[in-house]
Length: 191
Image (tube, rainbow, N blue to C red):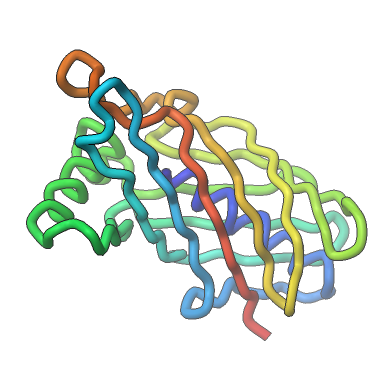
């Protein structure tokens, strides 16, 4: 989940970098990442999909050739939003997500991304490639970013298993979380 968030943030940062010649920090007050976690399994009708928001802890965009983006997200800062769940149930989901069974936020407190290349993919569009680290595992990541209304937006799909995370599965797999997570991002760079 967090890797998707990190990828999205880095992509936005890379695009902003391509549009200016200065180092620009990510505007963490105006930037959002939303992770969509979907249920699966025979009895998934009795489970819940989850919506998680991840604030950006820090990051920068450099437009100098070659353009670059670096970003970090604190895993402990991820928040389960799920307005349809009781506060108690949200707290349970949050504790499980941050605990040793999934993200293990005490052992792996940060999600990081560093771009290795940023290429134009048309007017106000970019392809960003880089190294994403989640749960202590570093993997190559590639995603598309689009600039609209001065903001960088996109969606990226990540697999938890690629980062050494086994998706939650209970009742013999009849209720589980899908391996793939969708991350939507809407990011602004500071002016």
